[in-house]
Picture 1: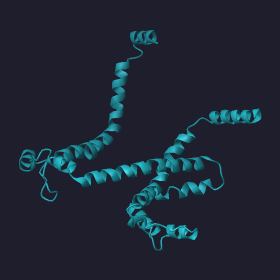
Picture 2 (picture 1 turned 90 degrees about the vertical axis):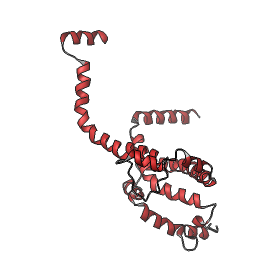
Picture 3 (picture 1 turned 90 degrees about the horizontal axis):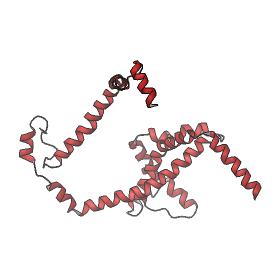
Picture 4 (picture 1 turned 135 degrees about the horizontal axis):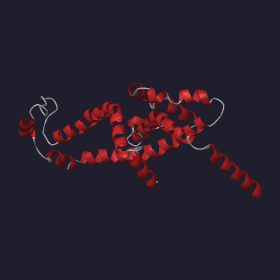
Length: 228
């Protein structure tokens, strides 16, 4: 291959360096809007937040970080004092614990539910077309509307979830009013909101699997059944 490229270069047929440069020039106008947006809306806010976190700015007075950086830092700079106060505050560790609990409950549940949804959508069962429309509705529903729905669903007095539990003889908890059940309730609502999006991601992966693997698995399964 190297000999072919070398011979082609000698003949003037291929110039890889020029090809890469011209390819980058062609792609740059298409990439530039996304790169500018990423820099303006992601990189710059991160940098600004880093500087502001080392000041005692109250968030209400005028922010002159861009127009008068030196004056602003001279007036408000406190170094790592804010970080010291955070790590010495017990509420920080409580928030960290709550976040960890949410992650531990949310990730396995969303994976299982999303995989089930992807499996259903990937099948040829009757009514899949209707289900493909319904399952994605929570994703496009705003969190304002979703929170109102789940506030009603999880209501301990007249919520539909506790009504279903009482119908089968189970006393429903207080959910959002209970320190033990508030986090599972939030996780449940979050899974409902996100399952359509992640289900779609897994579905695209399932549909990308070559059908020959399914055929090979079916043949192997038939062989094992016949063997036993």
